[in-house]
Amino acid sequence: MNAMKTRLWPARPVVPDADVEVPAPPSGPVPFDKEHALMLLGGMLRIRRMEEKSAELYGQGKIRGFLHLYIGEEAVAGGMLPALQPQDNVVATYREHGHALLRGVSMERIMAEMYGKVEGCSRGRGGSMHLFDAQVRLYGGNAIVAGGLPVATGLALAARQLDEPRVTACFFGEGAVAEGAFHEAMNLAALWRLPVLFCCENNLYAMGTALARSESRVDLCAKAASYGMQAVSVDGMDVVAVHQAALAAVEQVRTSLAPIFLELRTYRFRAHSMFDAELYRDKAEVQAWKTRGPIHTYTARLKEQGLLTEQQFLELDGHVAEEVDRAVAFAEAGHWEPVEDLLRDVVAPPADAGATARNPSGGAA
Image (cartoon, rainbow, N blue to C red):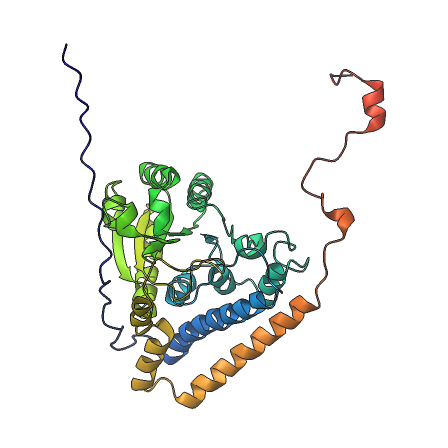
């Protein structure tokens, strides 16, 4: 008998690292009145200065554990969050400082949380990756890749069942599309016509892996469209484009009660986390993307249009710097949780000793 020949499945060739094509910087008129336009700028500046200070504090050992900075991606949260209403839900990833800030969590409580102080929004127990505030309907801060997608789908299902006019905005990175939770959430949201706005922050690298090295199909909108939902790709470095797309998508989800997928093409200027040696991308690529920085390109457009002067920018930046200083002072003056409280909300309280003695079997008395 002839020996059985083993047929090896042809391996897909590894795509060599090629120069990433960087689009031209955002340009064109800003279609908002001065107050609204400056609100968008202020939001991005608040995120940037808070993140820069966080990096500094991390180097000083004031902030510990994991820290994922949003520097470079400010136009996404800066354009998306102002399009939501107070009754809407927000679910984010571990790179969520900017989302929390613009959702209404005070910078003081965010900074205290990153310090691990009880005055933080999660009582110092969550840290950087687990910012949470039910009062502003921010449901994480989720440390697991794609972990927020089922949560968002469940929140949208609850809103649908209770007939509440809530949109649930779910933020996640492009690395999440490789997870089963992504496909389960997309399928159920489309099947049940749930009011979810899926916001994919595509920064090209899932931790340290380029998209083309982990996905056979890099067209993320095609993946969403395969579930029968509308999918739109947006320049995530342009706060104008993001905000316009967000306003339209939020209104459509709210009225049609059907999900929409937004791909927000962005780029982080810092490493994945403070532990990342960043050996997977060339420094020249990062510098090229910095020419598309969302803050300085938007500022230039505002100045060209006569909506902003350099003096006004410096004044706005100064106010933000004062807010950052107040946040740091608040965190420094905060308190550590008492040791005797560390198990609170972690394990169930012990059973009543008297009741156990009267009924040793644990059954009904």
